[in-house]
Length: 481
Image (cartoon, rainbow, N blue to C red; front, side, top):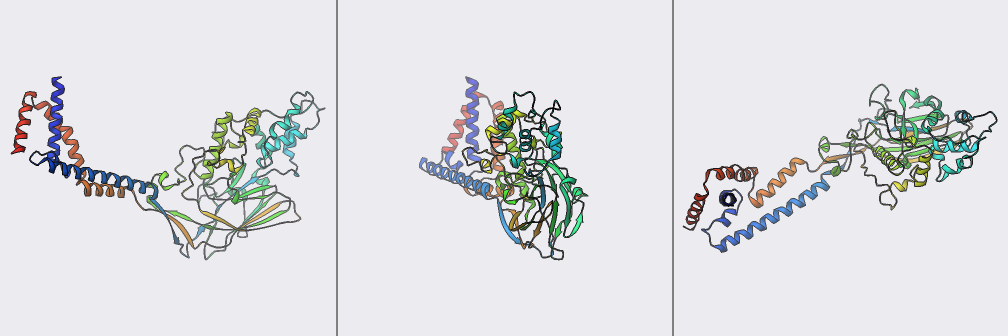
């Protein structure tokens, strides 16, 4: 008890000494007994009012910093500056009127005897699990259930759907017949590289997910005032869906406004588009992603894809939802051999079908809907604004399909994301508020730590308990004098 009283008395003495000598304005008037109690109460009210005002100002400033640290402005593009044409994606689609010889070979391999007839229901089932556009809700069980117990018929396979899809879907050379950039022919498969997406196996041109920007497999598609306007012509042998993408994006079901389907034989189409670039000041990276409301592509630590993008985030969000609901994911979601996620068999696909998360409607991905999948996905900081100005289409007497992407006008303006307030501004502003209302500085913090650590322990061990009362009484008498 005596020791506790000693520590408390030392602490009380240090507190009085700190208030009398610290640099914070007003505390010395409150604790000194040489002033009348009305003066001390006056200063107590002033100090409390000042501290309360500084608190609310700091809270208000931090809220403003959190919401308005970054701004978007529009600036003019230099007339001689060249820009990159966006990336392109090509994904094969299923077509009911097309014959798939590879699929027929796969189904023939399911025969256990030569007397078995070819099963077109199994073919329809396989088409729907290989090509996402042919899938419709509730179709998984309907094609396979009638043949569950038969012994002399071809049945639906129960697993290895990723292997079947790889055997049936067209390779790059089978899908792309001819590619031309501004009229000059180039090797399609040298620059279109395969990637696995929720749309199945696709081929991307100038995607940083697959090749190094500016490297050997990167097609230079720059346009400027002194060059021809950008025109990319693709002749494709099979039904396909094309996408205009940012260089970090991948095809996804949410990119409907930049998706173009070319299914009928002989289809020919022309897509007219414009784009507005976005650039970022270097200091934007120093701001937290939740404050700047975007993520840079290389800020991607928990993904199987090389770079972050909104489409990558949503794809993996859907994949995680499938695993959570059915303990497996669709085989289209398996990126490569390093992806060890569980692949759905027949029962797993039936679960995805019943939960409506195999290829859900785009509305289910909107978090404000009651049955939506809540995906905390921010846009990429480098994605450009791409606008579709117009489309033309027709049917020609030919076996393949073709699409022409044409940039109709060079951008004259672009967006710039810049810092309004950075971390140094926060330090300066808060320091100014504390200095204005309290007279505080960085040394005031050192002073506080010093009094209640070094000074406290030194006084605790140096002063004897019986001497403390005498010192306190003499200090009070000095104050009164």
